[in-house]
Length: 413
Image (cartoon, rainbow, N blue to C red; front, side, top):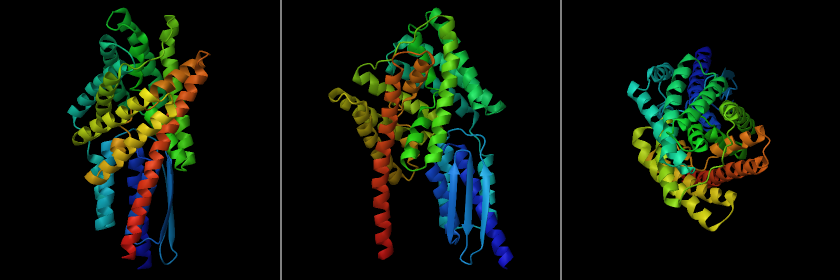
């Protein structure tokens, strides 16, 4: 009987890690992954659970009340961002914790999840969203309608190639380098065909499809949340990918002897409108469920609106982004609590106008070409990332404190 019980716990931990692996593969935060494993195992009566996760590995030890324990480790190789899949896995985890079905049934749930795939029309929608999103960001960063249209064309073609290369293999750095080089030559070609007026704005819009700005923001948040190893790994990965993008785009720039111009925002109304359009479009690319898009639009309006308002009165990038992210994180937590969805749905999509994707590209480009302004760009990236991470951290701590207090009162009652 003891052996059967131990075998069940081994299978249980295997199931919990199976869900955790799929969370990591779809871009979930480390804290969410570790909490999921812990909650599932504790729901089935485990005495203690110790989990350690980084973007490429997860390890967990489960111990029962009779001092029996088991340890398992898994490696993660392929990663992408699909917030809708994360939401489905979170729902599955909650159902498992609430109903504690037989472990064999949990295996069936995981296998059923693996068989679910996005319909073909969703791929077409994501490609169209890439066109709209990069069109909007090219205009937001200072381009005109022609620049936005040209950037959208480049991004549409890159999105098609990105999905094709993804089926062949997830060689992210190599794929990014090839796509960046192709996108750079295509941007130059459209410029000389008079489809766009400024190569800089065509490229910076298209770069948003490839630049790891969201990963960079998550990395700083994890560093501030004491997930130091995971945060450091994500920062290193982001820098390497940004370097690949710069090398790819720099080749056509160097061949045609073109100097990149730094972007500047349009007036407040256009900035907010383009941020909303770009945020909603990229949410589709990130796999956010369509029914959640109105929440993304409202959140993007709040975050960008607060930032524009702050920027109108204060000349401090760090303070402006911090306050804007405070508003965005508060909105994300409230919406997640009221409508029973993961905080990440709004947290990663409403602040895309603040994420230093373009800044990270310009920083690496300036360093690569030994430009004088490289230090200033680097400091802006640090301020932006710090503001985003600090804003999220403050709201997270406040809400976690409230949840713990309510849970404590419930236990005491």
